[in-house]
Amino acid sequence: MERGHYNDDHRAFAVLARDFVRTEVAPHYLEWEAEGIVPRSVFARAGQLGLLGFAVPPDYGGLGAKDFRYNQILIEEFMAADCGGVGLNFALHNDICTPYLVDLSTEEQRQRWLPGFVAGNLIAAVAMTEPGAGSDVAGIRTSAVDGGDHFVVNGAKTFITNGINADLVIAAVRTSPERHRGITLMVIEQGLAGFGRGRNLDKLGLRSQDTAELSFEDVRVPKANVLGEVGRGFEYLMRNLAQERMQISVACLARARAALQTTVEYVRERKAFGQPIGAFQNTKFTLADVATEVSVAEAFIDTYVRELNAGRLTPADAAKAKLWASEMEFRCIDKCQQLFGGYGYMREYPIARAAADARITRVYGGTSEIMREIIGRDLRLAGR
Image (tube, rainbow, N blue to C red; front, side):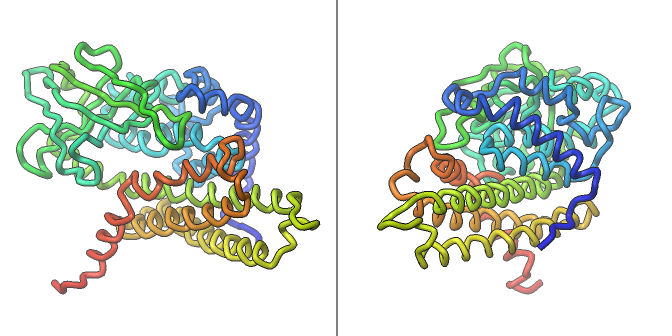
């Protein structure tokens, strides 16, 4: 079935993204996986090509392309080349950080941050999760005490993607005891006294994606670094979670599609009992199921991307997309990996890395259990 989701502009962007991934990323990917981090120069090169911050208005160096299909294409090209970890570093920068820095910033903040953000000279991260507050965003305890022309920030964050490389950390902090109205967003910049980074966390998958613990000890953050209004941080986080969950959904679909393709290629060549294992009925039936699930997910996710672009995507819809895509990805990659036998357990094979990378998608951005809770509430099962 022809995929009519993209127009000629999107397809031209896909060629640019594909060339970048194949020439600048894929040859070095396993080295970065071993090192646990992507060189900053890769962000700068992507910035030169217009692959970063493309939704940023032209006045600040962006393309003004506020169309999530461009974000989707970039993720798909990274996944197709088995470079998902690097792709999600970029997705965090583009898909999750951009709305905060564009929609909530003052003119002075835009002038100060956005040109470097688009150029890849200022790498961004979002710091929500804490040792005691993951899916429960309102449980954030990192404090910010009013100090006149600044806030004094104390606390810790964990599991922060781009945490080692980040120059700009969009941090959720508590400015009052109120559970929801007490959260504020502010940008904590590299170099502020008392801002520390812990170890680059040793993860099961997504190993090229630097993920860090951050600490704040009496960090004086200028009030000029507050994003939006004080006390409205929880509202802003909830507003942008729909796009974050769509980004995860798109990545899940793209990784499952890539796993299907690499498995089809493998079973055509791998022989057992004198014939390609693709000739066995079990293999055909297994991959028929996977191909069908991927096709169904593609139609579903593409529809919701268009809803996101139109401003109609609800939190419950985003939760449905994230729940279905992440669970589908896990099922499909597990079936594909089984067909590789013992080789599927070796990290030199892309299917093994895909399986490890996929495990987190049912957790970050809100666990599958939280997604079901959001969807269930939307059904109003308990009445008014």
